[in-house]
Amino acid sequence: MDIVLFIIIIVVASILQTSTGFGFSIMATPFLLLLFEPAEAIQINLILSLLISISLIYKIKKDINFGIMKRLIAGSFVGLPIGIWVFLWLDLQNLKLLVSLVILVLTTLLILKYRIRRSKNRDLVVGWFSGSLTASIGMPGPPLLLYFSGTDTKKDRLRGTTLAYFLFIYLVSLLVQIIFAGTSPRVWEASIIAVPLVLVGLVLGQKLFVKLNQDLFRTVTYILLIFTGLYLLFDSLF
Image 1 (tube, rainbow, N blue to C red):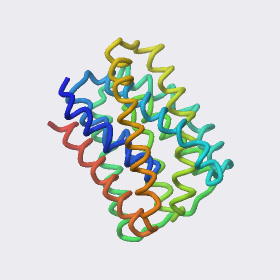
Image 2 (cartoon, one colour):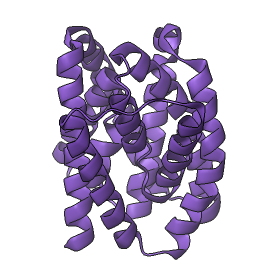
Image 3 (tube, one colour):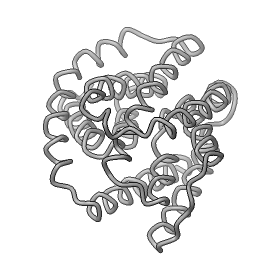
Image 4 (cartoon, one colour):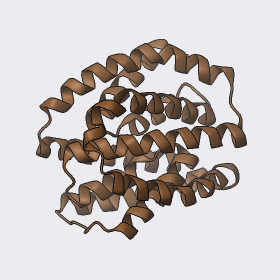
């Protein structure tokens, strides 16, 4: 394992997750795949993302919209078994291609000021989509990021609600992954090594969050979405 690359990946991804509520799976998973097998990379991502959510839950609890979070969780219960079935039996490259095109098209619409109206049913659908992507490719964030950006959710509420939701979805997805796909000592060794790196990212990310105004926060989310869409597109094609 290239330890320098590993350090950079974990610190940068932790900073993004702490400052935006998203970013760890989006930034870490593509690069962890350079160092680990796909199942290992996904499980390391789940473990460390779960650690970040646990570390921040007390600080962000006042910003959580519990109604939305409960509906996201309810929707994810339907999505999780679908996602693990996709992971075990279907061609993940075709799934990544489809997801990348959806992300890029919707991000383009958001940049062009297209907005959507939030509803309880849409909360459930987004939770379903997020749960499916978590269990299949380890990326629950893009559906939530697209949805909350499209409904102009304030940055504090966005970060608080998603991190609280991630606390549930990452834990359940990790258990599902271990039960159905197994795990390895390498996953846990790498995760233990990464713990101090995550703590560094937590401190730096919290400082960055305070400095982000709403417009800059929105710009960062668009960049993350475009990066995710392009990564999944090129990964599926090449």
